[in-house]
Image (cartoon, rainbow, N blue to C red):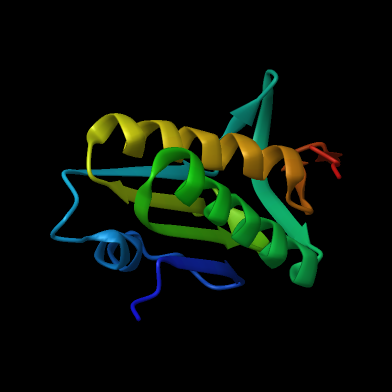
Length: 141
């Protein structure tokens, strides 16, 4: 049986091509991809880098729960959720979510659901590093 989802937490660079190729499927008319990148500012401050930490066993389990939920709610066919950990510089990809479904509306909805739910439930913490200091943000769950 072919795997329906690919969940990864990585300390190395993410691959948009790998995610796209994983979700490509002849029965799908829509593929939606979200790529979250490190931007150079937040709340009027200059960002130098981001540092992501995760409680890996729980983060992977929660990411799998999101994928299973997406399959049920949106009838998605294949899902890739890849998230980085460690120190990332401006422009680096922090997260890639790729979703395929029979129709574009389901792919769009599922992709948005995935990133919103990931940010709310997955134990991944982000430290923003500024030119003049640093702060932990999105401290959840």
